[in-house]
Length: 293
Image: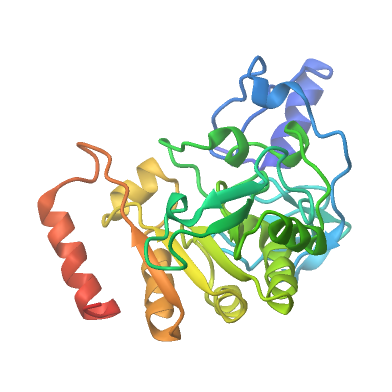
């Protein structure tokens, strides 16, 4: 059986049908519901054209992304798994820098993130963009995390404007949340740096599916991180989240050594990750590898 890559498959499909219309397919293989309000009004503004960090150039204008454990190899004019980073002529660009999802930019209580021991009772100005490097079947925010940036409404909000909006709303921090901040890494990093200059903290709400080097750079520029720990089995990560467990464990170990404030949330999905033996094993691992605190 001949294995085709995505580009070859599309070429064969178009050649065979004389230009058939292909459905919109999400990164994890699910299909867009064209009648959903989330997709009814595409972005009225353009996409960003900021060169991405953490990738290497390969032959024939191909690149390999080094931001997250997927290490997507992306051909010219193609995108990575997250759908918001594109190879253009051998240079990798983020398409979402300064273009957060419209309606996601507002002040939230810190406890909604949730952070329970970092600036309690204060407001965090929250931003998010389209895209994610995982595909959890239970995702609450799938309408922004599982789409491409041009399929939803965005607004232009560069880092300096995020900082100004946070201050205007009486927020003491900026939160990168709702979708997966890893996929808008450059926007998050630039905003955190701009916010720190004005005395604003930055908090990250993430699944922790990120490689060591970009993770450590991010940790240096933000003030608190909350990791959604999905489960303590490889099977759950593969079948429910389309990801791997080990990189998340490594990211948590990095956090524990860094000295930054971090919290862990374990979202329990009945019958899937609520086995008490696994939970006990997870707790033992945390005590041993992360520390008793």
